Amino acid sequence: MSPAVDAAEVRRRTRELLAAHPPATTGRTDFLKARFDAGLAWVHYPVGLGGLDAPRSLQQVADAELADADAPDNDPRRIGIGLGMAAPTILGFGTDEQKRRFLRPLWVGEEVWCQLFSEPGAGSDLAALATRAVRDETGDWIVDGQKVWTSSAHLARWAILIARTDPDLPKHRGISYFICDMTDPGVEVRPLRQITGEAEFNEVFLTGVRIPDSHRLGPVGEGWKVAQTTLMNERVSIGGSRIPREGGMIGPVAKTWRERPELRTPDTHQRLLTLWVEAEVARLTGERLRQQLVAGQPGPEGSGMKLAFARLNQEISGLEVELLGDEGLLYSDWTMVRPELVDFTGRDAGYRYLRSKGNSIEGGTSEVLLNIVAERVLGLPAEPRNDKDVAWKDLSR
Image (cartoon, rainbow, N blue to C red; front, side, top):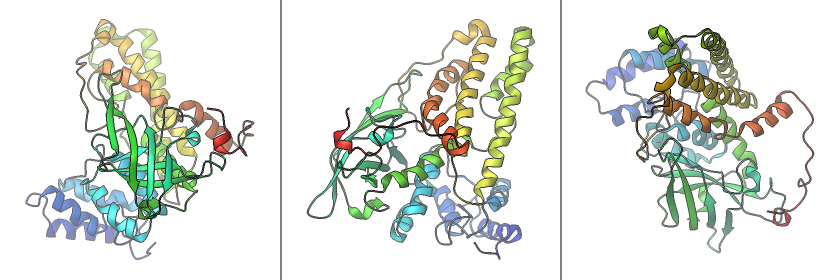
């Protein structure tokens, strides 16, 4: 980290960027590329990779200057998987060539990413995955298998993928981590229609997909270790995103409460007060978690934030539907669409209620996250396991 980069220096560089590329007259993509090249994409990333080797906390200095100038952003909700999961994993485990190739178009939003982790038989127990990657005589990897619950697969150019490369080892070993080209002819994406009516998720079938060894992240057989970086960042990005007071789910129900006093009851009043306080506590805890990130990589504490996010969203959206009475039973549109972004809080109360049901599954089920918090945060003994030293191929499935 460069000691010469402070808030004044970040502010100076940001103003130089704005002077050289005025947002009013510069195309959006051109401006974003110039911002990346100026080191103002992720200021804590290395020089040449969108950063300045500066403290993470200085990002808000650049962001504030850019917001005041009405500069375009990179539409982070549309490319959240790339920003929140792929980028930190590539930075942590990628080669110099991989970092140069993938980080700039990822951040600019020219290339959308998805995550090929979960499988029909390996969701909560992700390490039981069965998708196979076999190396051929050319050194490339040939991948066959099925993935599921894949957000944005219908839009993605690239995917982060874990596959089994050695079935003779226990399940947490013998897994390798790859970057998969979603345009390969062996990749088939099928929509999964959800309870909301949308097909935000997909199932992905991989048949003879060829991945060059140059698209492997980390050593062969150490994909589980690499995947932990992805998963910890995913949980922080889901549960610990920066929001203002009354942001997220609590905002719409608080607004309804203020504007429609005829709907109020003593019971809903007490429940709203309780949930408002809990939402504010979760928001401030998220701020503390982001401050901890300044010192290093996210830890298991992100699992606690994601747990709180899921529980609060479900309880708040349930209160909102109940508060609205008959109106809460209405639903605006069941049309099957394949959206371009994940929207937890959009549309109406019915949508929020139904969409929040997935919050306790995606990004790690609440049951799995409770185990992580118990073992890795509280230091409680791990649950007994009888598959720890058993080869994956000998496990019952």
